[in-house]
Length: 307
Image (cartoon, rainbow, N blue to C red; front, side, top):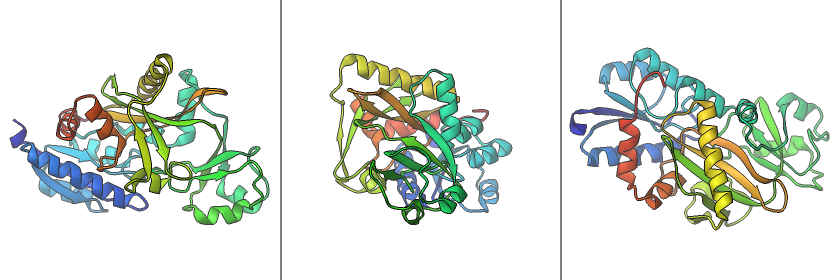
């Protein structure tokens, strides 16, 4: 019975995504308690192994985002400790978090991706006037989430990259990706089930951190107004991307759709989608007839080792 299971909700962790993880974790913990589980909330630090040894949970609910929690590290610890855990396993998490490696997998699976290249911080700082590809393009830290450090380099940009990078969290490696005009779309996969496609319309600029998490930062249209063939294509790519990376549990794939140009392009796949009140996966689950509590319980009951 669910009431006999002790769930450790892993949350917080390291910046820059710590604040969002704390909100996701608190929401999930409350939902699990309401469903009858015994819950311990853990603000993850370097003593996590000792904390888990003391608590002896039946399952670890991974509500961490970004570095350390979404890239295979905490998944590896949980495997060593033989504690069943939620979401994707070590390899899938590491691959999805590294945008360049994920794109290699997507390309091998025949999925549509944008032109891109790897560029180091040293290159950007040493030759700040040299664009890694012709503008417009998007510059992203290779291993950050929540749009931290994302810069859009406009077509006629003259701003030296060294100056632009002052607005970005320092990362050793960046991905330059050709800018795809068009609509921002996303689709979640739960197990082997794709949800309805959702369109994101930021109130201003692009879908950055504020647009993701601030109340009213973006408009969410669900279902997205798409031709049935495009909707089916996005759901199919989401399933194939999930499978190609070897993901488990719930994931969310992000897309650009340029009807007059490149069509549908997959940007990345998130193995630890947010679970805040403004997050997209809970909204897609609700549209599919699944309450927040049912979604969280599904994720917990799907937990295992060797993921």
